[in-house]
Length: 197
Image (tube, rainbow, N blue to C red):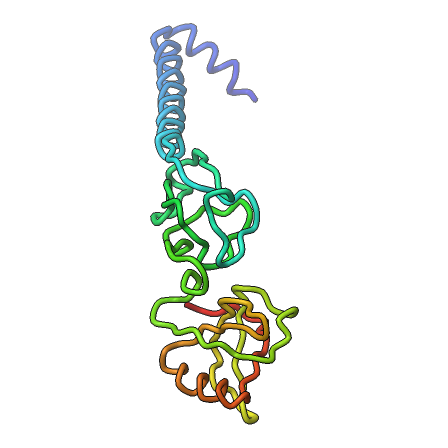
Protein backbone atom coordinates (compact mmCIF):
# COMPACT_ATOMS: atom_id res chain seq x y z
CA UNK A 1 0.00 0.00 0.00
CA UNK A 2 3.07 2.27 0.00
CA UNK A 3 2.46 3.02 -3.67
CA UNK A 4 -0.77 4.95 -2.93
CA UNK A 5 0.93 8.07 -1.54
CA UNK A 6 3.44 7.97 -4.40
CA UNK A 7 0.59 7.75 -6.92
CA UNK A 8 -1.16 10.71 -5.31
CA UNK A 9 2.04 12.73 -5.45
CA UNK A 10 2.56 11.81 -9.11
CA UNK A 11 -0.99 12.78 -10.03
CA UNK A 12 -0.71 16.05 -8.08
CA UNK A 13 2.44 16.99 -10.00
CA UNK A 14 1.05 15.87 -13.35
CA UNK A 15 -2.73 16.58 -13.49
CA UNK A 16 -2.93 15.48 -17.13
CA UNK A 17 -2.25 11.88 -15.95
CA UNK A 18 -5.25 12.11 -13.61
CA UNK A 19 -7.52 13.24 -16.42
CA UNK A 20 -6.12 10.61 -18.74
CA UNK A 21 -7.02 7.88 -16.21
CA UNK A 22 -10.49 9.39 -15.77
CA UNK A 23 -10.98 9.44 -19.55
CA UNK A 24 -9.80 5.82 -19.93
CA UNK A 25 -12.13 4.62 -17.17
CA UNK A 26 -15.00 6.56 -18.70
CA UNK A 27 -14.26 5.04 -22.09
CA UNK A 28 -14.23 1.54 -20.52
CA UNK A 29 -17.60 2.14 -18.84
CA UNK A 30 -19.08 3.57 -22.06
CA UNK A 31 -17.82 0.55 -24.04
CA UNK A 32 -19.36 -1.83 -21.51
CA UNK A 33 -22.70 0.03 -21.55
CA UNK A 34 -22.72 0.04 -25.36
CA UNK A 35 -22.05 -3.73 -25.46
CA UNK A 36 -24.84 -4.38 -22.94
CA UNK A 37 -27.31 -2.23 -24.88
CA UNK A 38 -26.36 -3.99 -28.14
CA UNK A 39 -26.82 -7.42 -26.51
CA UNK A 40 -30.22 -6.36 -25.15
CA UNK A 41 -31.23 -5.07 -28.60
CA UNK A 42 -30.18 -8.37 -30.23
CA UNK A 43 -32.17 -10.34 -27.64
CA UNK A 44 -35.19 -8.12 -28.18
CA UNK A 45 -34.91 -8.51 -31.95
CA UNK A 46 -34.60 -12.28 -31.55
CA UNK A 47 -37.45 -12.77 -29.05
CA UNK A 48 -39.43 -9.60 -29.60
CA UNK A 49 -41.08 -10.32 -32.94
CA UNK A 50 -44.11 -12.54 -32.57
CA UNK A 51 -46.26 -14.68 -34.80
CA UNK A 52 -49.82 -15.92 -34.41
CA UNK A 53 -50.21 -19.68 -33.98
CA UNK A 54 -52.88 -22.14 -32.86
CA UNK A 55 -52.43 -23.86 -29.50
CA UNK A 56 -54.46 -26.78 -28.16
CA UNK A 57 -56.73 -25.72 -25.26
CA UNK A 58 -57.04 -29.32 -24.08
CA UNK A 59 -55.76 -32.77 -24.97
CA UNK A 60 -57.06 -33.59 -28.44
CA UNK A 61 -57.46 -37.23 -29.41
CA UNK A 62 -56.77 -38.54 -32.89
CA UNK A 63 -59.89 -38.07 -35.01
CA UNK A 64 -61.29 -35.18 -32.93
CA UNK A 65 -62.39 -31.97 -34.70
CA UNK A 66 -59.96 -29.13 -34.06
CA UNK A 67 -62.02 -25.96 -34.52
CA UNK A 68 -63.47 -25.84 -30.98
CA UNK A 69 -60.31 -27.16 -29.28
CA UNK A 70 -57.69 -24.58 -30.29
CA UNK A 71 -57.18 -20.84 -29.85
CA UNK A 72 -54.91 -18.22 -31.38
CA UNK A 73 -51.86 -17.12 -29.39
CA UNK A 74 -48.94 -14.78 -30.04
CA UNK A 75 -45.55 -16.45 -29.49
CA UNK A 76 -41.98 -15.25 -30.08
CA UNK A 77 -40.88 -16.26 -33.56
CA UNK A 78 -37.87 -18.16 -32.19
CA UNK A 79 -40.17 -20.49 -30.22
CA UNK A 80 -42.47 -21.40 -33.12
CA UNK A 81 -41.92 -24.55 -35.23
CA UNK A 82 -41.54 -23.89 -38.95
CA UNK A 83 -44.70 -25.89 -39.73
CA UNK A 84 -46.90 -24.15 -37.12
CA UNK A 85 -50.48 -23.51 -38.23
CA UNK A 86 -52.22 -20.13 -37.88
CA UNK A 87 -55.57 -21.00 -39.50
CA UNK A 88 -57.62 -24.18 -39.94
CA UNK A 89 -60.13 -25.35 -42.52
CA UNK A 90 -63.57 -25.68 -40.90
CA UNK A 91 -63.47 -29.50 -41.17
CA UNK A 92 -59.93 -29.95 -39.77
CA UNK A 93 -59.45 -33.12 -37.74
CA UNK A 94 -56.57 -34.23 -35.52
CA UNK A 95 -54.42 -36.84 -37.26
CA UNK A 96 -52.72 -37.75 -33.97
CA UNK A 97 -52.91 -36.89 -30.28
CA UNK A 98 -52.14 -33.22 -29.54
CA UNK A 99 -51.24 -32.38 -25.95
CA UNK A 100 -52.79 -29.44 -24.12
CA UNK A 101 -50.69 -26.32 -24.68
CA UNK A 102 -48.96 -27.79 -27.75
CA UNK A 103 -48.53 -25.68 -30.89
CA UNK A 104 -50.56 -27.21 -33.73
CA UNK A 105 -48.37 -28.07 -36.73
CA UNK A 106 -49.26 -29.15 -40.24
CA UNK A 107 -48.63 -32.84 -39.57
CA UNK A 108 -51.22 -32.75 -36.74
CA UNK A 109 -54.17 -31.99 -39.00
CA UNK A 110 -56.09 -33.51 -41.85
CA UNK A 111 -59.20 -32.27 -43.65
CA UNK A 112 -60.84 -35.72 -43.76
CA UNK A 113 -63.14 -37.11 -41.10
CA UNK A 114 -63.69 -40.59 -39.72
CA UNK A 115 -61.02 -43.31 -39.95
CA UNK A 116 -59.35 -41.69 -42.96
CA UNK A 117 -58.54 -38.66 -40.82
CA UNK A 118 -56.10 -40.55 -38.62
CA UNK A 119 -54.59 -42.93 -41.15
CA UNK A 120 -50.94 -42.14 -41.85
CA UNK A 121 -50.06 -41.70 -45.52
CA UNK A 122 -49.87 -44.96 -47.53
CA UNK A 123 -51.64 -46.97 -44.81
CA UNK A 124 -54.87 -48.96 -45.15
CA UNK A 125 -57.62 -49.60 -42.61
CA UNK A 126 -58.85 -53.14 -41.89
CA UNK A 127 -61.86 -54.04 -39.70
CA UNK A 128 -61.15 -56.70 -37.08
CA UNK A 129 -64.19 -58.23 -35.35
CA UNK A 130 -64.66 -59.68 -31.88
CA UNK A 131 -62.31 -57.30 -30.12
CA UNK A 132 -62.95 -55.89 -26.66
CA UNK A 133 -63.39 -52.29 -27.79
CA UNK A 134 -63.52 -50.99 -24.22
CA UNK A 135 -59.75 -51.30 -23.91
CA UNK A 136 -58.98 -49.27 -27.05
CA UNK A 137 -59.22 -45.64 -28.11
CA UNK A 138 -58.78 -44.07 -31.53
CA UNK A 139 -55.11 -43.28 -31.99
CA UNK A 140 -53.84 -46.15 -29.83
CA UNK A 141 -50.68 -47.77 -31.16
CA UNK A 142 -51.17 -51.52 -31.47
CA UNK A 143 -49.83 -54.67 -33.09
CA UNK A 144 -51.87 -57.25 -34.99
CA UNK A 145 -51.26 -60.90 -34.13
CA UNK A 146 -52.52 -64.11 -35.73
CA UNK A 147 -51.59 -67.79 -35.52
CA UNK A 148 -49.00 -67.21 -32.82
CA UNK A 149 -47.04 -64.58 -34.73
CA UNK A 150 -47.02 -60.85 -35.31
CA UNK A 151 -48.39 -59.96 -38.73
CA UNK A 152 -48.16 -56.20 -38.29
CA UNK A 153 -45.93 -54.77 -35.58
CA UNK A 154 -46.93 -51.25 -36.57
CA UNK A 155 -50.64 -50.56 -36.42
CA UNK A 156 -53.02 -47.95 -35.06
CA UNK A 157 -56.69 -47.98 -34.02
CA UNK A 158 -58.50 -45.65 -36.43
CA UNK A 159 -62.11 -46.37 -35.40
CA UNK A 160 -64.13 -48.22 -32.78
CA UNK A 161 -66.80 -50.42 -34.35
CA UNK A 162 -69.85 -52.03 -32.79
CA UNK A 163 -68.19 -55.46 -32.56
CA UNK A 164 -64.53 -54.69 -33.11
CA UNK A 165 -62.05 -52.10 -34.25
CA UNK A 166 -60.75 -50.67 -37.49
CA UNK A 167 -56.97 -50.83 -37.51
CA UNK A 168 -54.67 -48.87 -39.79
CA UNK A 169 -51.64 -50.82 -40.99
CA UNK A 170 -48.85 -50.15 -43.51
CA UNK A 171 -49.94 -51.07 -47.04
CA UNK A 172 -47.47 -53.97 -47.22
CA UNK A 173 -49.01 -55.56 -44.08
CA UNK A 174 -52.64 -55.01 -45.12
CA UNK A 175 -53.12 -58.25 -47.15
CA UNK A 176 -51.96 -60.49 -44.29
CA UNK A 177 -54.03 -58.53 -41.74
CA UNK A 178 -57.14 -58.64 -43.95
CA UNK A 179 -56.69 -62.40 -44.53
CA UNK A 180 -56.35 -63.06 -40.79
CA UNK A 181 -59.34 -60.79 -40.07
CA UNK A 182 -61.53 -62.58 -42.62
CA UNK A 183 -60.72 -65.91 -40.93
CA UNK A 184 -61.35 -64.37 -37.49
CA UNK A 185 -57.77 -65.14 -36.47
CA UNK A 186 -56.54 -61.55 -36.08
CA UNK A 187 -56.08 -60.19 -32.56
CA UNK A 188 -55.23 -56.60 -31.73
CA UNK A 189 -52.64 -56.10 -28.96
CA UNK A 190 -52.12 -52.73 -27.32
CA UNK A 191 -48.57 -51.41 -27.64
CA UNK A 192 -46.81 -49.33 -24.98
CA UNK A 193 -44.42 -47.64 -27.40
CA UNK A 194 -45.55 -44.91 -29.81
CA UNK A 195 -45.55 -45.59 -33.49
CA UNK A 196 -42.68 -43.95 -35.34
CA UNK A 197 -43.90 -42.20 -38.48
